Image (tube, rainbow, N blue to C red; front, side):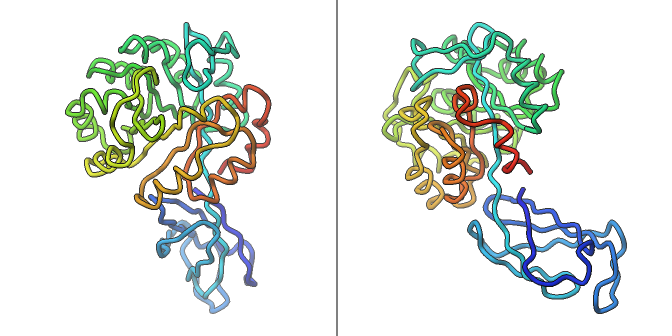
Length: 316
């Protein structure tokens, strides 16, 4: 989604209600006619007119044709996704994926999720760190509580290694799941999930140490290079990729902008979700400028570096 502001004179500022939708890196505008245009033409209320942009970068100028030519300035809006990581049923954060560097931020993840929802946030990245370590889903009861008592759209990851794990996650309320280790250890099974549920519900987790894929709750670094790994799964129907540079995670020193730019240069239609290192609003703005479609934020919120009220400017 995005927002739109006009920079030419309108006959009536209430003439159009405009909503932007993004698919990959293309931007779509949907307008609903409300009143008569200057030329005297009238659209039926509720009638949709869809216009597709050229292949656009953020902050570019684009001409939309409604009843007359109007120039609009379109700015891509990044999707904000707060994270809740679970160990022992509690909301925690790790630093650089190290289970020994654990900080407990809330004894009740549901209350944290409710605070996110009450602030206007619509998405949640929920990670079962116990499950990642145990190699099977563990904290499904936390998922079920949050899904049943909030309206948050949840993607769930950590320990999903079998069809039963996947079934439990979806039955407990996950809208999407993230698979990282399973995509490495059992690519046939993960590819089957993509074929069965589609690329909108199955997210690829591509977490890296020195651009090598890390698995098992980041406890194991493989010899698999990031870029061919992603390319292979995009070819199988994956649309969304969460990428965490483990060295950045929990350090609040800024995200891996250079890495994300290279990823988008190679795969401009990929829906890239950045994770790790975000410590300020400026970091979010930098990711948005780079064309990153979504960002996961954890420790910066819990440490008070970013206030949820300050995120309202990015919510759409």
